[in-house]
Length: 565
Figure 1 (tube, rainbow, N blue to C red):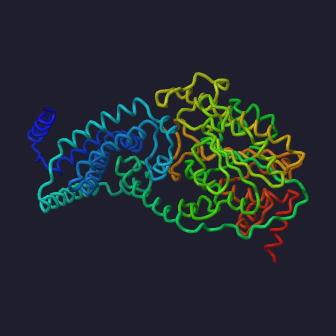
Figure 2 (tube, one colour; figure 1 turned 90 degrees about the vertical axis):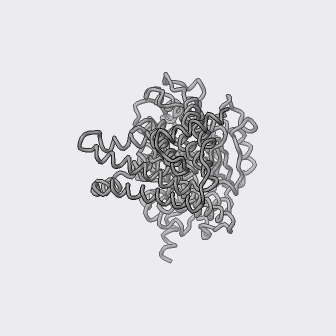
Figure 3 (tube, rainbow, N blue to C red; figure 1 turned 60 degrees about the vertical axis):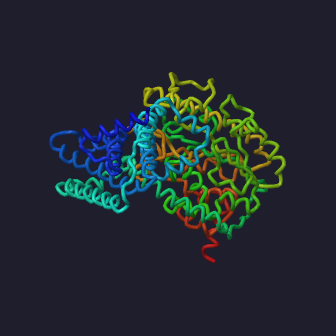
């Protein structure tokens, strides 16, 4: 019965629209459906760039036709043969999902975002699924896709089908040329000055990004199957005046904005504990990327932001490997999804469950990563020790889940996955409460380290992987392409605490808190912290020598000797 109804409906559509019931026609209809229902973000960005008025109207019409023609041409090429209906159905479903996230959070579906999706675990996925997403998926994805699968016409003769496709593509290309030619100056400006608008073309940009992502992953797979390239093989430990072993805890923060720390001038008191802990908060620190999947491996790599490439990073050692190879005991504890490949060759512990984390309610808390560290340190008393703690931090969009109820100082808070359904104040309150919990966690790290000052040269370094958009410019969350990412996603907090007898006295470090730093500085900072020198860090030491000249530390003197020998 349902098949008969669909067949009748399909026939009547073709009859009343005066269109032939061919695959080409259906693909054009599917393109138009997606253009109309799944490109709200594109339309909004076009109108933001070219406000609706009589002067801009012709160019806006031209742009809309151009983007539709682009979708239609791509679909005519992709949806071919017996699998055409399945490909078209899949494109309709994916486009509806893309549209939800672009419309709700202002994100761009590029290859970095796809990498984030691929690395998303079940817990993170549950935090993103909402009623609105499901409703949109059903109404604009699954139902239309079902209709396409059931009603899509069979392909005609091969020669006839190819001839029809070529004719359609040629017509669409000619149409594009006709609507572009009168506005060549406008398009030249649009292409040069407004790249971000093109990123919202759904699904053409995500199709391009899929190709880029798959190509990247193919290269990464190839790299994983080649011998690991050693980095800083010339690293040697310099002599020091201290006979104490090093004990450093590095905290890798998650989704933390520089401007939400009261240490950095934020009007709300989000750092009441750190304000009393004699820490140094550096003022100008930028991230390598805008996502965990890029920033975490990048900050531990010697490649730096400019040269970072996932394939290259996978194929070579990071600073954790270099330290471990040179006798430093390294432990990585993770309360996030994972180490993003950084801790593959050192001891790794997952604190996302009650198996190891004793503080879960049911959300496993960052402070639980301190449990049992005393025993670990005691078992390594004859070694220098580095402990990396990877936070859950402020991972969104459910900021209210990132802290226990006792830390809900600012209220009311947003308790919805749909941030656009909350007021700006509610979102800010939830986010700031999570920062407040990070303040508590870091103060507990310092409190944990203090008893070891007598026997160890102790220190803590906290640096966030990236920031977060909280509605500024209509953007939420993170992972915006770096070239267009707002400072809210790239300016991150860096907080350092050192013990009273540290070889890096706070009084000297504090003099340089205004120096511009970035994730690029982590690799060599860790080597220097453990008194290693390497030619890999010669450019770093030369460019940052002003940071160390005032320190009574042997590494600079040794580097200088090495450079003149």
